[in-house]
Length: 274
Image (cartoon, rainbow, N blue to C red; front, side, top):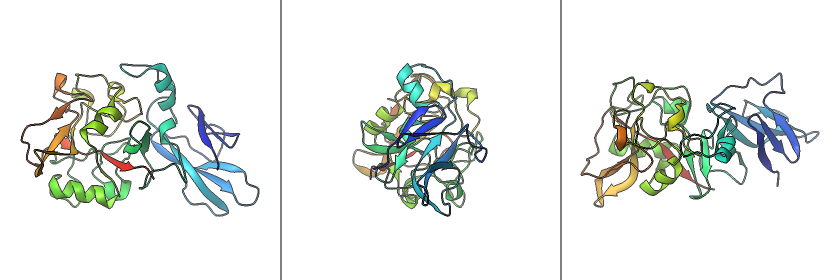
């Protein structure tokens, strides 16, 4: 089995051979981008490419080079070891033919303690073209307000719409337990406020230890958990840009919150491990 591991913020190792995003004249190193690892069918050499399919090459895996700076340091509840893992190339995003989610692995990270994959980025308003986890796009929400947008071709973002979108990408919403563990590392009890402008981007204090961006304090996200076992009631997670101390990895809204569609409610999806 071919082993892929992160060496530095811009370098990986594939079966003992190091490949760097800084070395190739054919690669443009761009933050927030998925890269693919290919094996040459003729000489068995490995290359990194922005393209998923290449003639004469076999796709063996990939990784995400995130928005988190290469010199990212320990902050809030992220220690130095975790900071190193998510700076530049995200260690948790590396996938291969056996270590991957059941869905498209692009823009996702593996959460070891949960054995699931979670989207690095919030759902964007043009997910049909971008996938559900894409940097530098517009946050999808239940209303066109505060620079958010209702997903293209939808009238709202609630109930069956949320489940339909997730299912179309072979994903699902997170449970509260999964959310709490995956989003840990953020600055707890604060909201993004004016740092949020409706775009999917890096805001330092709201980064989880797994490199999940805008993990909390930007927009409530629908969970998989039902309230009082009622199909039309779901728990909200994470808090919004205006919730201050009520935002964080443990923040949840457990009131009788009927599925509704508002600018302050969006989505983040997950997928089970292959």
